[in-house]
Image 1 (cartoon, one colour):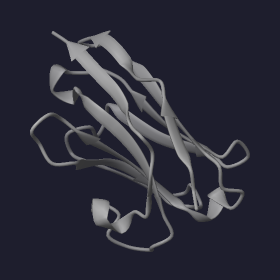
Image 2 (tube, helix red, strand yellow):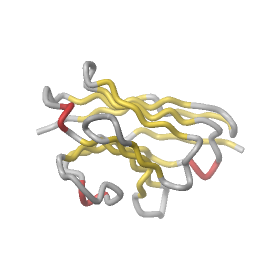
Image 3 (cartoon, rainbow, N blue to C red):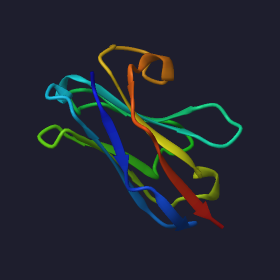
Length: 124
């Protein structure tokens, strides 16, 4: 069982930045591919970014490419999401997730463990 705890959300003006963190309880954290998803009110949960267990490969949704950066520190059992040039449409609850599956990382169904979420609100 992997316990994930997100932090770093908040209220920011458009054009601003936030860094989200997700701390994992699992000692074998380095063997998990980690993802960030978000869910806005009335919308489905959508893929934001993912980083392979090795940290060598990252993938992003087109809507955040060039603005968001996912990274991980396996020594600290933590994954990060640096969000720059934030837009009002980035407003959502952001979730981190973990999986040992080796494909289809864009789908929420691929992930077995989820954090409780952290709210990000971008004002215009």
